[in-house]
Image (cartoon, rainbow, N blue to C red; front, side, top):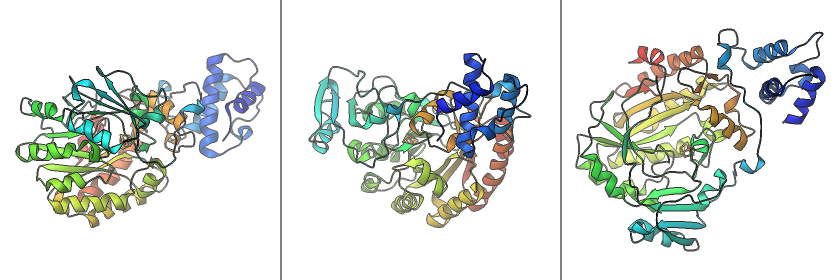
Amino acid sequence: MVGIREIETHIQTLLPILGVNKQRELVRLMYEIAKRDGAALEDILPAEKNLNFERAKKILLQKRYPRSFAAAPKNAFYLPKLEFDPAERADLTERPFSPKKIYIEKAVQDTPLADRARQMFPSAQIEIIEKKQMVGSANFSRRTETLLIHKEQYDFVKPCPCSQGNAGCGYNLINLGFGCRFECEYCFLQQYQNLHAVLLPANVQDFLAKIDQTNWRKGLFARPRIGSGEFTDSLVFDELTQYTQDIVPFFRARPQLQFEFKTKSVCIDGLLRQGGAENVVVGWSVNAPQFIKRVEHFTPDLTTRLEAAAEVARAGYRLGFHFDPVVPFDGWKEGYTQAAEQIAQSVPLDKVAWISVGILRFSRELKKAVENRFPENNILDGEFLLEFDGKMRYPKDLRQEVYAYFVPLLRKLFAHTQVYICMEDPDIVMPYL
Ligand code: SF4
């Protein structure tokens, strides 16, 4: 991979007098083109008589954004300073979840969750703390070395925070935990999580106590949907948390509501022990098989996820599938068609409650976090532009092309299932309502 110094030297040779900000933009563009195309710097920006900054930037923008350069507004290109911290690089060595240090808030030190943590991780150092505090490493990549078991006081239930201007689907959230042991290259926690530990609340009953007091939104659905899994995977720690043992019977007794566990894991023992519930949905995040292999590190492959899905369906749960994030990589039509057909062949169609589709989008801050933690990633090679909601997204015409192909395909394969688009521009969503 080409280095920053090499690019700076090439630019200085061509344009010796350049301000810091101008140099920074050209370095960023050359780096992204060289990384994506594997091209030599001399071919990306050759020497040219009377070359100046404006001309150089135009040449590079055209090469970096061949599809969208002509139509995109000039302020849609996000060109932050390129900088790497090798200490932030993700550790992709396969390892079990085994925290070295466990902090337990005094108020929950005698709870079953705290007891289980002591039993499951006997060699971990335990510290009882008065109240939740900043713990863990300064490095996100080391977050699973620390576990914090606490009593949640405030953040119990809330509407899904679809960013401003998006067409919402009316989802509702309870935040049971923070932090994850998978390493998906696009995960927003990389930039969002400032407490580098896995946090698990021991007072799930306090969350459930809020359910009957809340006026839930129904959105596109006949019954309100409530889900966990915004800041963690809903099931990945279930052997430890056993939240399923409280949540399933609670919602089984409230058929007017629907609860969804969102996961990429196959930690379904707790669900199977509880037996099924018609209004409890196990929602798997799914993707094209080659994408899962390359980008969603440590997660089970599609076939393994679908075997687990078929098993919980047999136990009496309904299923959800979330094609999110969809990435239009080379061969995306074949990849996503194969995944959709495999799902349709693997699970009972009448058990599929909903399917969502969302194309990769992310904040500016996440772009830098991904680049730093996964320098060899391919997911940032696409033409991302700053969009209507301040997020970085593929050009609108490309998103429309993807939805125009994939949503009708899913609606054909899953004729009795609600298929909807997640977190998108209302203009794009409208034809599919
Ligand atoms: S499973 Fe979800 S929470 Fe966990 S790393 Fe992947 S995207 Fe993040």
